[in-house]
Image 1 (tube, helix red, strand yellow):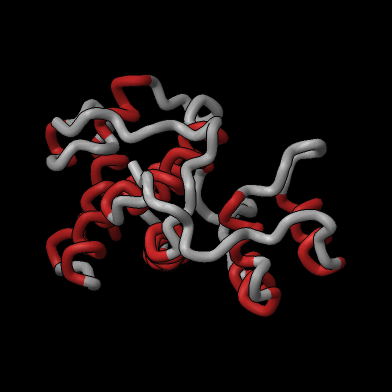
Image 2 (cartoon, rainbow, N blue to C red):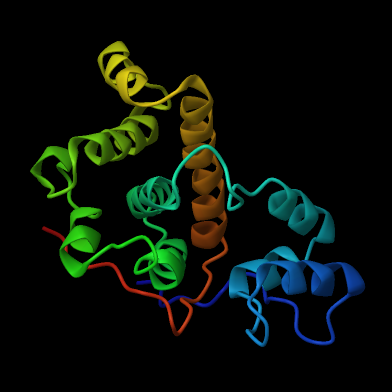
Amino acid sequence: MNTQSPRIAPVEEPYSETAAAWFRRVMPEGAEPLVLFRTLAVNERVLDRVMSGGLLDRGTLTLRERELVIDRTTWRCGSEYEWGVHIAFFGARVGLGEDEIADLCSDDPEATRLPSREKLLLRLCDELHATATVGDDLWGALVREFRAAQLVELVVLAGYYHLISFATNALRLPLEAFGARFPPRR
């Protein structure tokens, strides 16, 4: 858990028009903007580019597949901030129970209770994180389960959440009060 002070103070109200527009667009009504969004708003150009490049819209993947990739990637990157936000907002919506959440943070995807197709997603995140590429054996297994458009989205999604993890970790964002916490390492 990050107990250090944030390196850059997030913007506070009153927000600029640009920041306020993004916050209204991405946050549930009445919810305070996330610390991540308010920190990115220190540089509105970066806020605009990061928010415009997000992959939280309906794509070629199921919501569950998308979240498994986000959760595994952010866990691998040690971004408890982003992992916790996604588990809190989407975990129950995609049917992740306590055991599956713990499995997302297991060093061995094959030892998880997840179906084989979902284990492939964890393996993809692990391999991209460790090597910045995908070996032929794993790629062959992925091609048997996912269409080309999905494979592109999977790789870019993992890369995007490396970017987000780098930002949350390097900027030392304080954890959101509502966010989940990493389970004990097993």
